[in-house]
Length: 458
Ligand code: ADP
Ligand code: MG
Image (cartoon, rainbow, N blue to C red; front, top):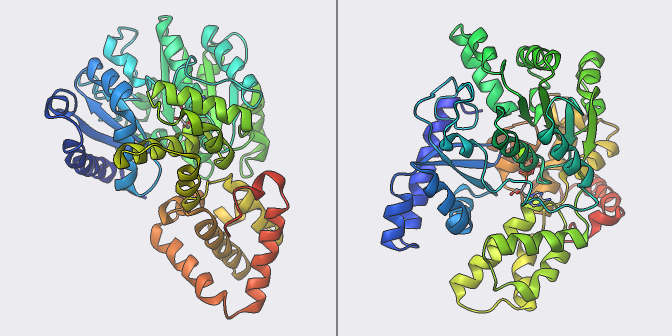
């Protein structure tokens, strides 16, 4: 994994490349006014953070250039990333350095700029409520309105791209608008800062950052599962806040009870309040989300074909957004109207990415393993073979990039994934036993109703 410094460097470089491309796509006046003094800050948790000098620029870019900037970054990164515009807060460098979301030590003297530590697009108003997320939405709203007094902790879990981060930011907006302090941090950010604090002998200072806040918004706690020391620091922070009736909201990719290596004591801590999940959206919800997104992104050329998009893209909300942006960009670039035929053509090339957990589970089941064993470091023959098959299926069936597959498999690097893929790809045509096993797994996958729609190209 890259160190914090490397990440900073590469975010800067990526943003430079993006600016080169953007410069030729927007007017000179807009470029100078809004993008001139921008900087790439970080790329964590699939979100690329760009800092700009003023809240006006952050707002303008979020409203007007978001689709184009995101598309440009997706092209450069070769994977799906979200974009967030923030105002760089120079007065409070804190431990996270340039990270705009984690510096919350201002003791309530928040300036207008600090509001942009939360993504302006991730509000309760912009969240499309449906049966699949109603409970999570209602609970999030309740804790934002009455932090510390109802469900504590609130634990929200779902597969990726279903709105967990969105809800955390929405809670952050509302609590800060009510004059309270909220801190949002990803588990990865927390872990990086903790390591830095240990190195610099500043753990107490690090922990004190969280002491006086009203709402602690902690994203993707599963990232800490194998990080014993960071986990311990997290739970100390958790206990301190909890004992002071401060609101804690945690998200993860699974329920506490399924976090295998976690001790039962820690699990019961996480389960002590309310645990809610968000399910993948059904057709109706997908269509509603697409309509709402098209409206906020001011995309009107796709009105007649959104139902086809909702039908074809049946994975998560991030994929729906991605498809919308992709189609809008195609319409703009080709200068032609997007018809149902074009949608079919354009979206068939990139099969939607369905919940990858199902795939991993199917492979693990086939080998009598637990999904976690595919993700963990175990390297015996059986586990390695299972892992390589999972890599192969993800790449073949979903058009996943090597980096994305690495991320799904516990942060393995691109070269390891390529090696695994090539091993299976080169053996599958000559080894009937292997190809039988792969067919069996595919059959199992295809027998799962929701899954079939997206996995038909394998
Ligand atoms: P997660 O944290 O679960 O991986 P995110 O919160 O990052 O997912 O959501 C991915 C994208 O989908 C974001 O751009 C978010 O705004 C959008 N999104 C997710 N759920 C909804 C929803 N119910 N309504 C509107 N947008 C949503
Ligand atoms: Mg998230």
